[in-house]
Image (cartoon, rainbow, N blue to C red; front, side, top):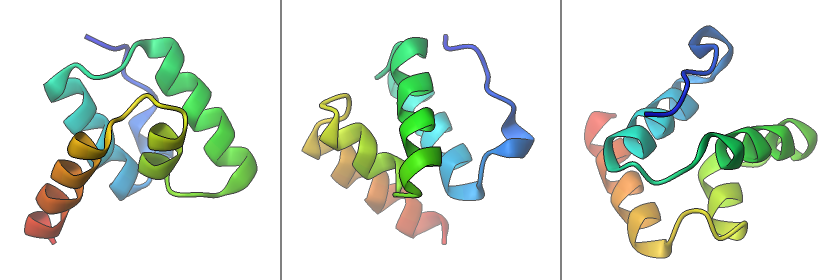
Length: 72
């Protein structure tokens, strides 16, 4: 289980992504921290940053987007 980042500081979309990643045990804490750091610098979507870094494959990315759409 990854250490929980300060959830109030995460956007709603990032909280959903964090829960998805934790459920599927996709990342190490260092990978999550690096992606968050890059997101703060670039302001890009976190799931795309994770995919660009190779931490999230396209299949999981697609599944996350489908689940997020269902929650909307």
